[in-house]
Image (cartoon, rainbow, N blue to C red; front, top):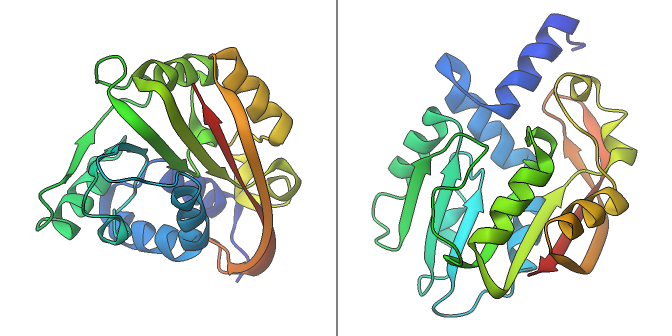
Length: 213
């Protein structure tokens, strides 16, 4: 089914910040569509016992139970609906915390985390350099950031992405992270087939970039 422009715009808004009656459905849809990218993003971190891990934009958090139990996990999201769902889904995990944030600042002290992961949020950073600086600030020396996203080569062909998404390629992200004092260590580009958020079957590129401070 082809979506109208109004429906595409609403879908884009819901993907940025799921809220209201559709939040549960949107959260489930994002997890189904982005599961492979999420797994690759976390896999690139090489998590170790004792790691203090921050995830930016965990959505409904249904993937968190698969993470090692010997790390400390914090998820931050701009959607209260997603925070509520994630808290409910992971209620039995003592090493897991979810909190609401404003999307512009990260409310933790300097060098609080050894690892940071984020999948499919970079398009929505309102002030990209300022937010990259926030990530660098809360990373411990030698800490690792993993950024998973759909590159510009694919995003420019996704109908809803013209509403509120900023497109990135590897060079863009490398420059952005460098501006915040982070150095890219690895770039992983892959291709997958998924059912898109608009219901169509598509082939898309996915990219995971790891960097250190």
